Image 1: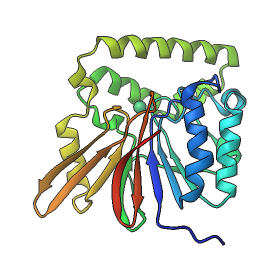
Image 2 (image 1 turned 90 degrees about the vertical axis):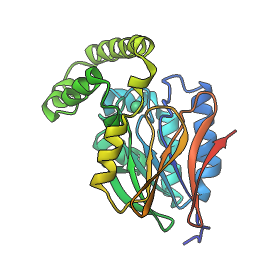
Image 3 (image 1 turned 135 degrees about the vertical axis):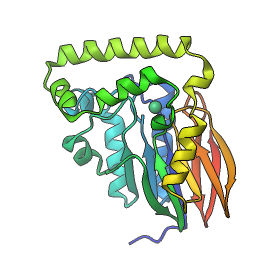
Image 4 (image 1 turned 90 degrees about the horizontal axis):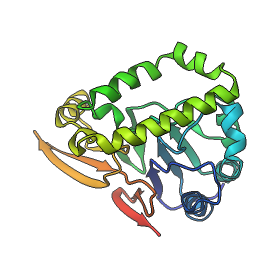
Length: 246
Ligand SMILES: [Mn+2]
């Protein structure tokens, strides 16, 4: 058993591309091969992949990245992956191929002796009613089952359409609607009154927000995306920091 220093990473919104020579994929592979093996654990809070259309279709597309993740977990680093709004159809074959463990949205966990609440973040964007309606449907197990049983060609077409649509919508929506709603954040804090640190992604607006509620200084850490420069969370010796990866 190798003893590692106190070090863990939390990241989200990598949006790995199907072309594995893409700069994002290269940056991610560098991180997974060089920095991640020094850590005790790595948490990926959703949207690791641009889309996931079922293990049968997507595992071969991301073979290089999947095997890098497997090498990482074989080396003893714990890897936890949650669903995002683009990749929530990973199933048994994915977890087996990577050696990663699934984490639910809104998970309370202790990382390097710091209690943290982890979530993707899309559940907080409640001002975007259209998006929340779509999320509600996509999260239904029977809809997912139906989708996964469609022929590969049909799934590819649907995924392409959804990507186009979400791109167009994002351009047309006012910026404040795409961010978290303050009411949703207040509700989240109320559900977890004792927790000090909340970490999420999704909005691609890396930041450290502080809000004093009663005796507790609530700290909301927002992860960045990986275009072009990643901003991820490093937790070491009970200190949390938002760091840039070069
Ligand atoms: Mn997202």
